[in-house]
Image (cartoon, rainbow, N blue to C red; front, side, top):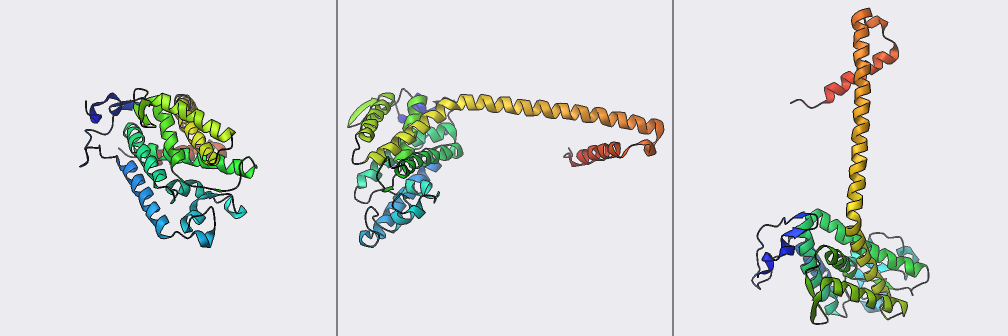
Length: 293
């Protein structure tokens, strides 16, 4: 059975498959949807720029160069704390000391991101992906500011990618992923990684800040998906209440207009009060603003 024939490529928890027939690349892999494709490109280009503008002597550790200094989530300098754009830009940077950091994140983005974008559409997927990374970075930043973690800098797409894992584990439980070279059910992988990351954070591992970001991203992805039905129900209820209120306002206004017109017919325009004239003028203006069919 081909990748494009699998059930999770055709159905999602929120609707039908939107991608049509999957096209494959020259390597036999499905071509990624548009947003995932551009995210992959931006990450690779950013990594090349990191290598080109690498200067550890000028900026000093933990910065590897110019891009890390200006665009990573950083708690080294206080002026960097509230530069909110860093919570987005850090997601496109990776450790120049470890190319596997980029490679594994891009593999996760390609496979997990493609499933979600085809299920949700590009706009919703992009907002979701960046939000997971944003929250993961914000949690790391807050932990450093509160003294829970040592000051440092954060780079990597892992927060967003782990958010994809959290979402896919809920929406596509039949999927298997490779974890430590072994194929395992995606929910098993998500559970094991959560345990590992928690242990690393609690024991103060060398990458405790990164793992805290991972947990934040994964939790955001899971909460986003699990909370979606509640949000949609609340939204529908609110829209229904607004519609009902507008209907009641419209009915009252129509009643007032009918009463005023009856008064004009009976007693003439001069009999209207200033308030009645304003009501009639307002109704006339609203009628003019309605689109002509």
